[in-house]
Amino acid sequence: MPKTADQNETLRATTRAKLLAAALSRFARDGYAQSSVKSVAADAGVATGLLYSHFDGKEGLLRELFEESMHDVRASFSVAESVAPPDRLAALVRASVAVVREHLDFWRLCYAARTQPAVLAALAPVLDEWTTSILSTLRGFLAAQGSLDPEVDARVLFAQIDGMCQHFALHPDGYPVDAVAERVIARWTTAIVL
Image 1 (cartoon, rainbow, N blue to C red):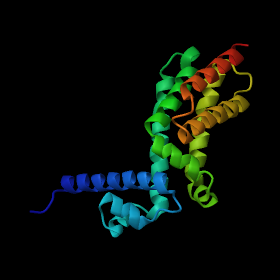
Image 2 (image 1 turned 180 degrees about the vertical axis):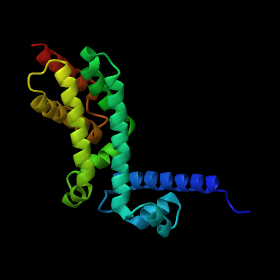
Image 3 (image 1 turned 90 degrees about the horizontal axis):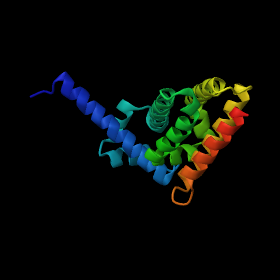
Image 4 (image 1 turned 30 degrees about the vertical axis):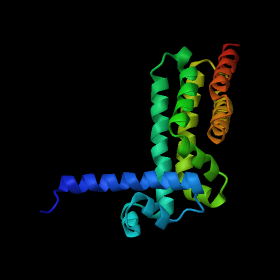
């Protein structure tokens, strides 16, 4: 008996999810450059050709992983936006740590990929959109809290959050991320109040 359109769509979504999970695992474990489309397809339990019906090769997989992560980051910002302005910045910093903690393999891959020029070139549009979105949100938070220069302050805060998260992603067992996050929050709260 042939499959219904709904069954086909469910199967397609399941296959796509398997491919993304396999790509994330393989890229995080072996590195993006050392991973092949064939190995990702094998890890997902599908034929290599089927991967190409879902993604534009290895770059397409990586781009989709980054785009999915943008949704996670935006969701964490939404949580922070629902908090009253005086506590928004603290909520944002804590939510950033939570996203990295929850998706540690992705963030390890992300920070490693950012050191590879070919990968950066392939991801430039996604990363540019991501950075613009984050900076815009941070500018809004900081302006609402009384920053005199939200443009520059947003870049400084972004660098601090990104650096903190990078150290945690690369050394999750030895980096005191919660203590560092609280120190970042305390310093920004004090800086903006002054």
